[in-house]
Image (cartoon, rainbow, N blue to C red):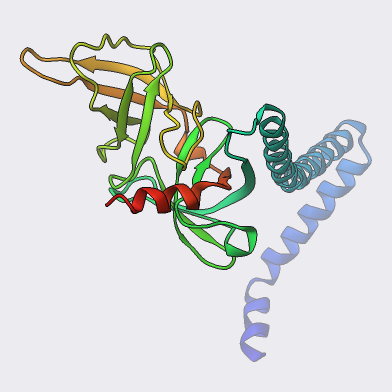
Length: 263
């Protein structure tokens, strides 16, 4: 306390000067229209800015809630379309919406975690998509969460076809760029052009036929090669992935057991 008093006494003249200056400024400001209006204008601007920031924060959380609701509605709408288009020979497909809660995109073996698990009917091997196209395949399942191997994982293979002629190929990521993957096993006699559309083939119970995969970016066929080297720009933007849908094929387990019996 004594030290504090010594400091106050030492700088007492300076403190008195500051107090008088502040008092003079306030008297001048509030007794003159222009300075007073400037101060009020500045204060109003600060308050308006604060209100704008608060409004944006509220809108952000409200938007997140709306996005989750929209994802659920998209899945339900897709289920209704599947129900309308199904026939006695088609496998019943059901879509369940999910949120991506964790994800990697810059590794060789990328993965993503979704907030759906066994309690939601999710099982290993089910396909995952979003509104843009194919995302990946469920790898492991817990009670409340599941881990998905996306297309941008070097261990993921996907049977695809060209929409223009139904020619089949296998899509695999080369571990370089999350925007692109390679389409393999396309024979040299096949004419491949930039812009050709690639979709799921339907030859696996994981995905129904015709889900968008990507667009041919370019194709290289060197003299003597038996197959094209095709670079496909993926439809799904993995850097911005937030919501997905799990493809639940009611006949998937039966089909896989029959196929496994051939080994």
